[in-house]
Length: 187
Image 1 (cartoon, one colour):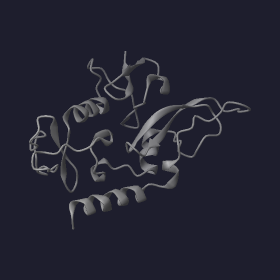
Image 2 (cartoon, rainbow, N blue to C red; image 1 turned 120 degrees about the horizontal axis):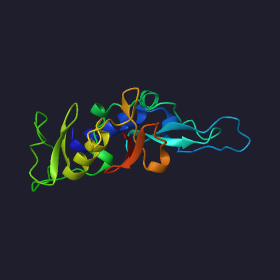
Image 3 (tube, rainbow, N blue to C red; image 1 turned 180 degrees about the vertical axis):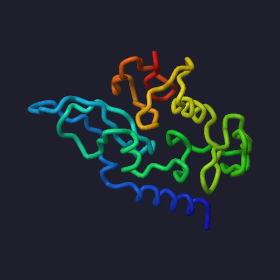
């Protein structure tokens, strides 16, 4: 089987594993004629294979709307180890021989020819991904803020948002813009 065919099969198996509601667009809903209070909710972003925080207005919207990031991840079957894609959907980095695969047993990201690439391991293979994006993304997902203080988590999952305007940090936390996402850090 060719690598292109293999990757196509993997992509289809991942896409087909997600329920249809996970592909519905983000909708903050409405507060008109709504008795429910606005709240922090989470939606699945199929392009990034991640759940992000958003401010729900209380009524309406789409079914791509979950009470916690963990419920979002469970409902949309997120398993990063089986999702073969470089972070944030970035393209793989090819070497001089037009190869983008690196040794699956690579330690510390070694195994890619380009200094701009880092070897990223998945369950069945490893790819050369953009070093800057991969490291920045891992920093954003960390449970520790750059200051060394705790990053806000719900059910053991770090809460990420696309902007500080999309998340309301709990008392004792402030929103910070990371490399690609915003998150709440302990004051």
